[in-house]
Length: 74
Image 1: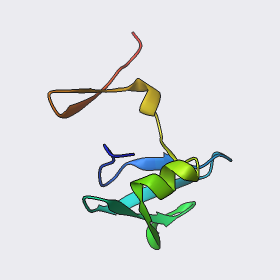
Image 2: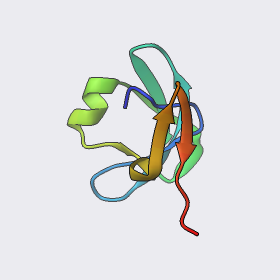
Image 3: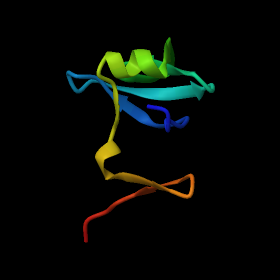
Image 4: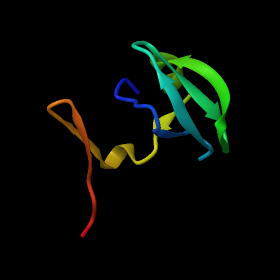
């Protein structure tokens, strides 16, 4: 979760989705699940990982020289 960016969609263990609205060095603000423009809660990166949150498509994201690239299938 440390590579999280504003605008990322996060997914909980049940597959519910929320949008990242703000990111600080050690925490982030997410929207309410299913309502991307409504403010939800602040989480530290460690809290979010403990809750099982994942960045949607995280398995297809690679970070190279500090920039995020998404793998696509051709």
